[in-house]
Amino acid sequence: MIKIEFQTVHELVALHRGLLEARFCEIPNDPDVSGSPILSRLHREVISQIISCESSQKAQAWKRWLEISPSRREWSVAIDRARASSVWKNSTDNIKAEFAIDLLSPFETTDSLIESFICDVDR
Image (tube, rainbow, N blue to C red; front, side, top):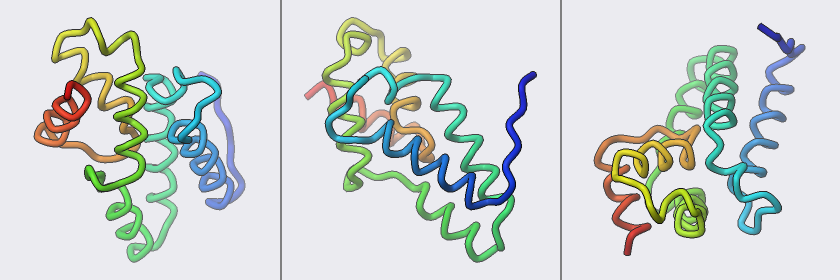
């Protein structure tokens, strides 16, 4: 295992912001970054570490921020990435759901949100 050590929570937040920008920018240089399962997992881990370092009040604010909805900009960006993806076009609903979770990570999803996401993309 390879480890990266951070000196402060501010470094973790900086990494999160970089991941957020790379994964949810509106005009991507590399569209595959958005749905990368590896980056999806890493982004969730970064957020988890940030939350574990924060006070309970700030941790709650982070948890509220993680609540994704169709009104969020990140949702729209993820919809665009799915529609443009060659992975999406010929996939089963199960593969689409897995891809949707990766596209929406680090945000919290539910089965109902994923179903809505799939319907939005397929429209």
